[in-house]
Amino acid sequence: MHRPTFAIMEKQLIDPFARAIKYLRVSVTDRCDFRCVYCMSENMEFLPKKDLLTLEELDRLCSAFIGLGVEKLRITGGEPLVRRGIMTFFNAMTRHLDSGALKELTLTTNGSQLAKYAEDLYAAGVRRVNVSLDTLDDQKFADITRWGRLPQVIKGIDAAQKAGLRVKINAVALKGFNEDELFTLQSWCADRDMDLTFIEVMPMGDIGNEDRLGQYWSLNDLRKQLGERFTLTDLAERSGGPARYIRIEETGQKIGLITPMSHNFCESCNRVRITCTGEIYTCLGQEGHSDLREPLRASNDDDVLEAAIHRAIGLKPKGHDFDYSRQTVDGRVSRHMSHTGG
Ligand code: SAM
Ligand code: SF4
Image (cartoon, rainbow, N blue to C red; front, side, top):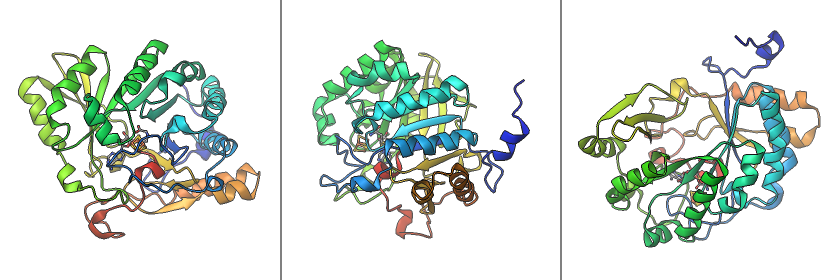
């Protein structure tokens, strides 16, 4: 059995509730080539470029976390594949996969650029990608993403599978929008040997006039509908995050249900998030965060950076409270998902 050396154990990131931090999600840009209605307003204002971490800073920061015991790195955004030069960053992370320190390098993408990058991502060591796709209807896809085109995303998924990447589809469950596509999406994924995860819509950021209440489709209800057609088995497997999994016995397919509004995952939460500006959020549902860009830019000394990371992890709260948040009315979190990275 592999045992970490004492030195590494000492450096491990352990939060005040004895949770070891193994999973880092990093948003590499706030920009995107889509404007999904639940995520962004149509006239989003993006951050000045100088506020974003450079690719070198992202490398240094992620490498510091990996040195402190992070084993899984998920790259997200905005749309990570629209960040200029992003393959330089992925290629730089390959060294941590090669050394064995990093166990998995992965990304969440809207799929629009996958046809271009799938092979390069595989070559960099990526083996799995999450592609967000809420509908298989051309017109509905154009409506929900405002700027997206479905055939381009399907082409991206084709390219990813051809390159050897395992694809999981993430769909936001939206009442009155994709409720009628539950079985279409499920069977399409089964035919392509892809797992499928549904995400409950979350109250994040100011996105204009969209009515969130009208959008909320309970995943309990979704599960019930699936159960009326299929034999479902609850899986014990947990990812350390807000997903629960069930297996459809008839297809062998794994279906994930992400219910971030519930609290049932907080005690095992092993993840933290970094925004594209280098803020670290230790809980998706809380406003509390620390700045890592300042220590990153102030000094080339990694000890300074590591000390700042340790201080930030020391502030990780026990859990979140979207529904009765002390920070904002209605538990709404003011930042956009594209800022923190979903
Ligand atoms: N652009 C990439 C994509 O769409 O996959 C990565 C970033 S996106 C912010 C990550 C995930 O967050 C996507 O699966 C998206 O559907 C989800 N998301 C965005 N806004 C959300 C919201 N208000 N509630 C729930 N999920 C949301
Ligand atoms: Fe872009 Fe992803 Fe947000 Fe859609 S969900 S607007 S694709 S960042």
